Image (cartoon, rainbow, N blue to C red; front, side, top):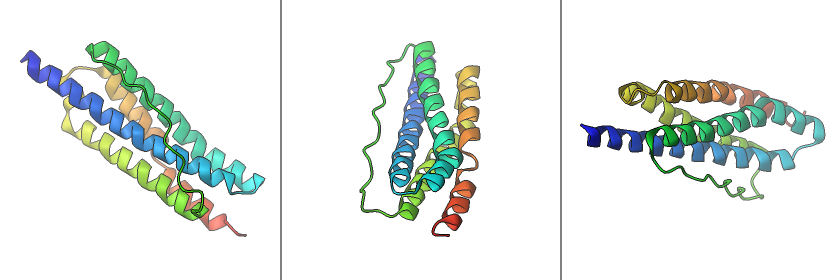
Length: 152
């Protein structure tokens, strides 16, 4: 039974790491998009998209580290994602960010639906996953709103 629990904890930790990496990709894409925008539009991107993703990334790293520590598993250092190709348009970069966040959210939904966080009995992990998802929840809508305003 202990092996099954240890294996489940490692699978959970790996899944949280994968989602965290995807959020990091979104953060890099948003940073690259920001560099191409004028100041008012860049400020809007920062408020609507970058800040919530940055908060989610920090919480994902903290959730991962906390769960690793509580489970006696080795923590992982997260490196910033490499910046995307600078020749990409703002819309393409926003699409990359939205796709990466969508993939991270899908990973987190799968975790939550699997009941593994409940089975390993870690309330802090469950709360962390919900918190991360809450910060990412409106990104697609916010990105569409920002794209509609480009070039006006």
